[in-house]
Image (cartoon, rainbow, N blue to C red; front, side, top):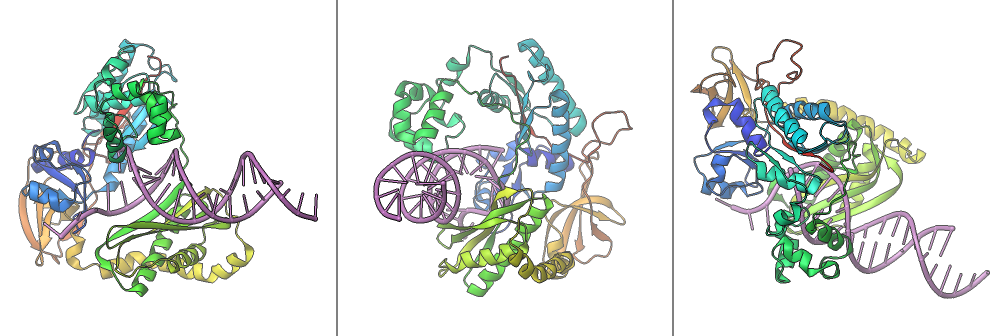
Length: 459
DNA sequence: TCTGGGGTCCTCAATCTG
DNA sequence: TCTGCAGATTGAGGACCC
């Protein structure tokens, strides 16, 4: 699905339909996660600094992502895909490859088109959102087809036409060619996919190295044998924070690293994993980024062990001048723990303390968060008198709420004091009214779309 | 008021190990 | 026992993707 987050927000909020909607971090260092098509007209796109987006589209609606509802809708859509084939490879919340041939769901162009059309209809019925479908004989081509299909379409690349189709396209069309590789190729006089093929494999390897060179040359010839892999195991778990203002105080840097280590371990444990390599990431005031890592003797999910390793790594980093981002990660994952007994014993007391800290954290956050910060732009609220709505903005002790629901007409706006006792944070409403049992999909409260790129090897 | 967050994969150099 | 070598592992950084 294109503009996934933005289209979920438009489906949730009738007053935003047809309007420029920009979803992303709203802090001073936020970037755009998704811009609706209406916002793209102004030149706004993903990964653009939010400040720049505001200059380009000052009248757009700016919202903070609601990952909970995006995940629910994503689960619904992935469920529909798994009804087609057991081989579903999610790429993100809003995109997945499906091997239709594996399940016998499609065997030729005609059957593939039928499956694609039905899938789009099912996604619309279950979520109220539009999904685009790309059908082709390989993952690369299905991906390109789905890009062509957006918004709200279906494109099939017929076998035998691949080279002619790819040839004139920019090298940037190929997966794995980003800004750096694109520049590299451009400097070598290579601008199109055809020119990659003409340059030859040896030249590509010379320019880009072995792995990238071979892979890119094969892609340019429309050769892509990568299978659809259903179960991908995570290779690392990490958390990171960018701070609104650079941190100069070394003690504060140390505390933040400890906090991130705890968060990382919580995620690790939540996934039932442990890991051997601890990674510290530091982005300095000048945006230079460095990582330091340490590999333990065995995997751990002990917060004390991870905290200590992260602290050791930080000792070796010069942070004078300030840091804008800190991160802690764990890789070398295993689904068991083989802890050094001494470290385990030493860590137990600290761990217990940390867990108590974790339990207390939500309460602590509630206390620390100023009352104004409870009202996050775009998030759902409920008022005793006016019902369900969403926060349009807040500040100066006031919060502005628009009262509307996915199924209503565009609603009215009212302003309250931030501490109004009648106003409370609410759960998102489903985009599509839940149907009685037996209707198949529709168990979730989801609302958004996801990019879907079914693949039909050999079709 | 430039440049998020969570990942994957690749390369290269240094070091370890058999 | 020593040496040389190949391969594995580790650590750092870069590119890319959504």
